[in-house]
Image (cartoon, rainbow, N blue to C red; front, side, top):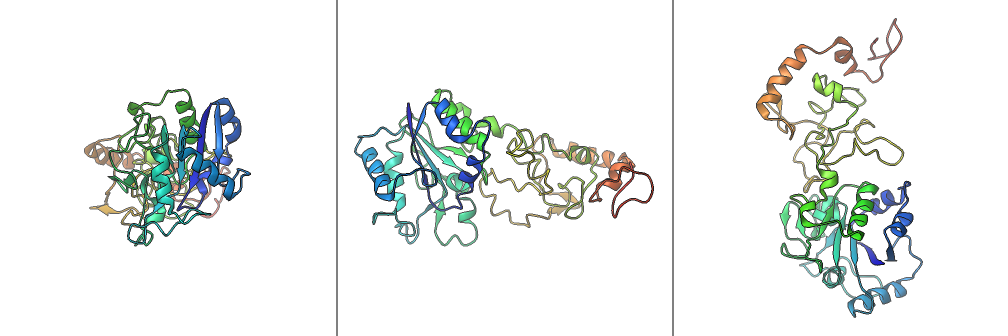
Length: 334
């Protein structure tokens, strides 16, 4: 049986909330199936602070073997790299010092969420807490741990990015580790498991018919494709959000929210509005990753010329009318 320790630092706890919403199977059930023993988790374990510190101390003294170390939230290095922004409860020792020591004891070190992986939202703006990820600072390799860090199984930090992470991404990664099925070649250029980053959020989007004909939304609640005007990065974001429904069904784009590419490093600093597409000469600056630029421009022109009436009118509607007669506000007959 593998021992798993889960710690939290600078973040909102949203990845744990997402994980606890897993229902097929749920978190605890999947741990049992994968033969993983949860040593301690700050949100769901019964052990008090004193008892939790005994577990951490026993790990450092090699009395307990640490197979999987999971971190949620970014590492807070301020002020002046001392880490005193975040002291481990019950001690006078900065959390970052605990993490460095524990990471050298673990067979696998896992960053859960974009904060733990790259710094995420906690590092946005002026970054007064000097937040960073475990092995990345934004897109630059090297965070709290060096770019050369390897766990005892000779792997770098495994970055399950996302804000929050899909519960399946976490559970499947833990299952792959438990079954000795996760190797370096299973991670992409930012050390994310490829099983969820080999797709684009655009794949499986329920607005793809609008995308194909470049029938675009122009304001929130419109039904059209949100890439051209509304800042949607689904054609550039590496994640399977529209193929793998979130608990309860749906995704950001199916709920009417533009994709902000939260699985990517530096997503929190897009240098433009999250809800407005930057353009150059009328062409979106960010183009799909799965199509050459020249093709996209040529096909866009042809597609707009051939857009069916129902899509052209429906793209700027907030509801589609299925009855003939006077349509609802902004609606269209089909």
